Image 1 (cartoon, rainbow, N blue to C red):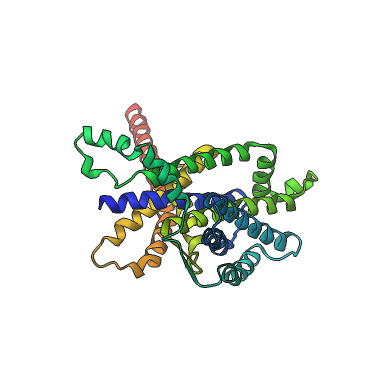
Image 2 (image 1 turned 120 degrees about the vertical axis):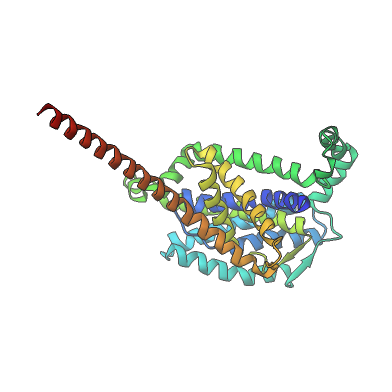
Length: 336
């Protein structure tokens, strides 16, 4: 159980980058972008083929993010310059990327088990400084070393990466361009009335979003040890689930809080999946069904809870009103 939870934490941190990308399009830009299912694989495919051909894994990871960025920009151009419906432009790009990803990879699956990856390179530095021994000391001192993970490498390295990207995202959304991007998602007609180029912000937003998705894909293939052309199937649902769960559990009052909520939502989603798969009657093939149930629950439960609170508030108000009316009638009868 403990190992499964730590594994969920590791993968959740990697998928959090993808969830941030989904948040940028669906919440900030208000654009239903389905490119995610394709750009996630594109980022992984580019990084995998470069690593297999001997390129530096860090450069391969960055270029995986760049490939996702370009895919997002093309989706934006299809919508803005081609006047294609937002949903359809994403579907067209996602469909086209399947063949593009096969072209990049040259085959349906690329194994990376014996290749140098970002995590293996960081792992060599990690071992030289005995980082695991240092981080294990608090667990040993408290006598709970059996609850410690097998290694802290992925957790700490991804935590640093996710925090840096979160801070950059928060900063970007507070800049003039970021505010214009948010305004475009909130009220595109108003922004156009101010003579702003909304098309540019749409393309930029989709590019940044899919850049994060591609970066997540590049990291996940190195974490899994393989790249597969079908790795992105249903990824948009995973991203939406992370965003919805995070917003429902941790709130959306400020940008910094919302991006943190999205990250925590991605981790919570992976933990829920890990716990669900440990139920005896649940098989790995049920994962898509579990995802659908989680998304449905995340959408329905907050609305149900809000409605219940509103009904209770109305009942309480009605009860107080009736009590006040009864007291007034009683006082009036007594005075008569």
